[in-house]
Amino acid sequence: MTITRPRGTNDLLPEQTIKWQAVETLLRDMCQEYGYQEIRTPLFEDTDLFARGVGDGTDIVQKEMYTFTDRSGRSLTLRPENTAAVCRAYGENKLYGLSKEVKLYYIGPMFRYERPQAGRFRQFHQFGLEYFGCADPMADGEIITFAWDFYRRLGLRDLKLLLNSVGCHQCRPAYRQALSAYFQPYLDQLCGSCRERFVRNPLRLLDCKNDACMRISAAAPKITDYLCDDCREHYQQVKRLLQAVNIPFVEQPRLVRGLDYYTNTAFEMVVDSIGAQSAVCGGGRYDGLMEEINGQSCPAVGFALGMERIFTALAAQNESIEAKQRVDVWVIGIGSRSTRDKAFAITAALRRAGIVCGMDYEDKSLKAHMKAANRSGAPVAVVIGDDEVSAGGVQVKLMAEGTQTFVPEKELPAYLLDRQA
Ligand code: ATP
Ligand code: MG
Image (cartoon, rainbow, N blue to C red; front, side):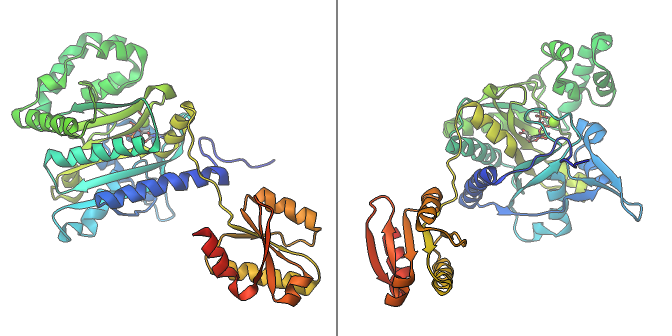
């Protein structure tokens, strides 16, 4: 029986990886503009990290984790998200000793045992930012601006920013109570998971995707009616900053996000045209998480975006990323064995000079070689036959014009680089 890839995973083939690389380059360039540095943490962590950092009552921890016991009996989990791990690494490596503010980014695979469908996989990839040490709403504003501008620079249209504040440990208890009171009479109409959520954390009910539950949630109390003065002011300030940088937003008073550790700002960006899996990124502030993980408090705000959904969204809008393997020069060696050896050496020399160079190593007719040169898309072919070798040079052929010039071997790299410049 042939073996196929595990359900919910993808092979990224060269025509796709080249586009992924282009997106990654844009992200890394933007990180440089904004002052975020990369952190790389392990793909698996102590299971407790996620139970604590993502939240015991979340779908991720309850249903979606790839957890296993290793040979010495430790419980380990493939990371379902990366914020908890970055917080752990921040504490464990005492990054707070470097400066008051630490701005990090990550990019890599995450693992969730979900029902695979369009835009939802079991191994998927996230890019994310974590901004530690700044309690000012400007940090929230920076994170949202980064995400918004990234999608705009990619050429994505119909992007919608959904914004909310989920309050803090001061104001949330009253809201929780109001929610409990609201949902109580509907208990027997809620789905099984929501009946559990009702007991553990009624805020989670607002995140359910079940139709019946969503209909009931639609009239639930709004957290924005329960915010304390500080949270209300923080939220106002975030909105003022977004207006200052011309980023439109839609307030969504029931947006709670899937993770437990959010305080104040919560946001999501969606592209409705891509169907059910419309969320392209999500994030917010989580001032309480660092203490939960490292025992030392530190304000924090961040976001994570799904890499796969970028491509789904672009495809839905008939857009794609222009990225192609470039070939500068095609080398053709034709004639005796020693002439072809010479062509091999010239190819290597051109590559050493930084020229993207292709050569078909098979012994073929000139016609077959020219066909390969055309297929490669190279604007220039370098033809080396027995006569050229005796004359100590090569023929440089411009593919579009069909013109040919003799160039001495020693001058070739400089000649080609000059042409490219
Ligand atoms: P969703 O509501 O789609 O389940 P989420 O709230 O679970 O998303 P987060 O945990 O905040 O998402 O992850 C941030 C982003 O990662 C999402 O906005 C989405 O673009 C992407 N993402 C999340 N889960 C998956 C998955 N299983 N497959 C592909 N992308 C995903
Ligand atoms: Mg999810």
